[in-house]
Image 1 (cartoon, rainbow, N blue to C red):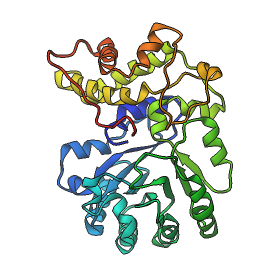
Image 2 (image 1 turned 90 degrees about the vertical axis):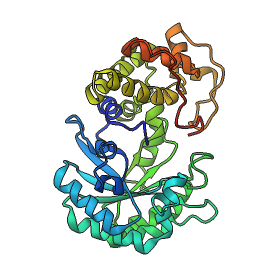
Image 3 (image 1 turned 90 degrees about the horizontal axis):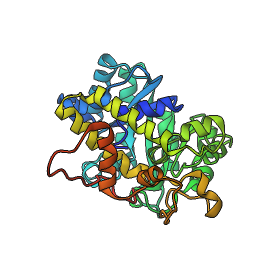
Length: 342
């Protein structure tokens, strides 16, 4: 959720029923250096009932100093170690998913961070660096013995990024039995896009709960659907109200001056690059229930606003931001940070 899992987005999710939220991945080294852009990722809104921060790093001593700083200066309910990030600039420095192949370093990191904070320390990883050699099941006992409070696994490898379907069968057959035997909560992640997906996993013996990530970016009302166990054919006007809330929250967070407006616009456009992928529930009758990985088909929308909100065109996303933030500056352009397959 880098770039898009920001505080204004989390406030929207909380309003729709999210009970636990986590900040965007923050680089521990940059926090130690006092970089304002990184420190901003640690901010929590009072509406966030249970809030954690996620740290990435390759050095146990540095991560421990960072955790100690956060425990002393920030109000957080947990600290999550990122052992899942697949991007090259993180992986090649030995952070993120690279920690899955540095077991001694990961174990030291968990133990040392636990010693300096009062809140739980958790881990997020993938099934492995390569789907051909998954090793997340080998880390379950390591995490338990090192003191991790819970273990979250995204059902894809580092090389897969977000392609192919998440491998829930591996999580259930290889990881869950070990976690159950050792008594460490296992949290599953990947392709949770419908409330039935979440409920099925949460009611099984395999998982304590599930993580929502891209599914919540595409339809943040998924939290409501899960809590109420129903499909919500949310109207285009109700969706627009959520975008209005985001703009309002963005101006409160980044500021209402010119710089704050443009920051809000840029982050809102990043979110809209996901939001437009939503296919209204009312259209399911004429098509297969969509999966997150499906390419969006041509649709005949029910009204003009619904068509605008579903448009894949950047100029239409810009139009939406102008409804709340005013006209863009002359020469404005935008390219999404995340690919359409993200």
